[in-house]
Image 1 (cartoon, rainbow, N blue to C red):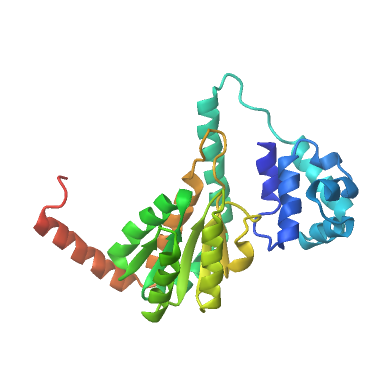
Image 2: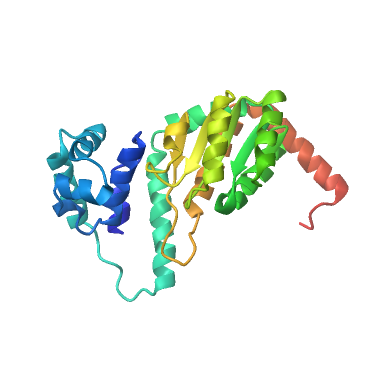
Length: 275
């Protein structure tokens, strides 16, 4: 849990690729990060010592010593693992912590509302999610399509992906929702760069402020993934996706309500559900 507490220091910060590398090193070495000198951090990250100083200042500290003091305060107050818990229980409890952090971040809704306004006005609305993020993109797209016309889930890579982005843009799309989760598919990052070059506004749901797509998006909505099991848990990003969809619905409540009523009437007429 110490690494996650260190990661919290970087949430919401706009970091350069070099600064993201430094942040990642501090997270990976969270157990001793608070006692490393700027030179030692620079050596681990493969960057210059001034880069470490600039990183600290980008986070709002006067220099690296001030950031190190904050790291010591954070890591010294980290609670120990609950006694008597097995690995599965700890993994689930960690997800509960992730959801609490999402809830805390939602204390200020400016970013969510800005993202919702950007996406709700796009017709069609492409939703990108490759590899591990594919199911999340599909989940969001399934529900979004009930209330927004022409939601296009882009969950397959290859050269056809760029064709589908071009087609969405030609059809009038102005924004792209990108779901990018570890291990950050290279193809997804490249597609987002292409989308930006084509004039799309990009909203991203990703796992942290050190994600490689933070510098490519107008709005970033971070939600941590669980790393306590062999494969990641995506409870936090899924919750963030549904919060975003709720905010999108709030931008046009009357059309949304009408479309939902139309869907329910059609579902009843066709006998889609057993209950």
